[in-house]
Length: 166
Image (cartoon, rainbow, N blue to C red; front, side):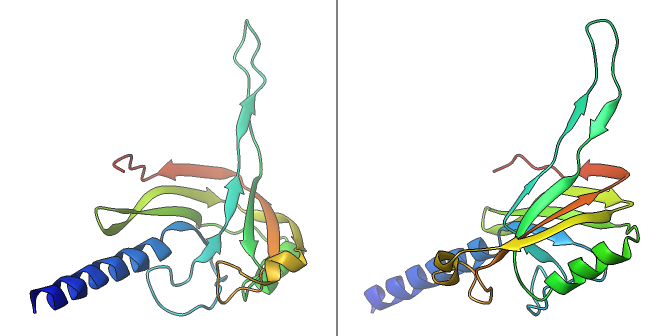
């Protein structure tokens, strides 16, 4: 009897750990764009596979330079949000309140560890691609396996919610 309860508790812990880990990752909140995957902790957010951004300065040894913020690029699976991103690119209208959110499971709880909030966002590039190998064995059961690269520029950024407690 005790063995049966032990295995039940062990199975429950493993299952809850797997479910929590599945919700970790990088997500983009972009007003009017969703991947339509339903409810949950990331409703209205688009899953992001990778992102890249940076900034530089034209400083010299004798003077400080002006910062140059690079556009942000991210990679995502092709999904229901794809046509919305294309529409925003074509419209060329700036959008505020775009937020990149990074989640991690800490002590069994899904925790927001980093946010990037952007103002005056304009999508400047959209490209899609893939290979036959990506069509099978994808980590996302509802995704096509094809990926998209999207780049946007912005005129304001606020970096917040940093937790290094992991």
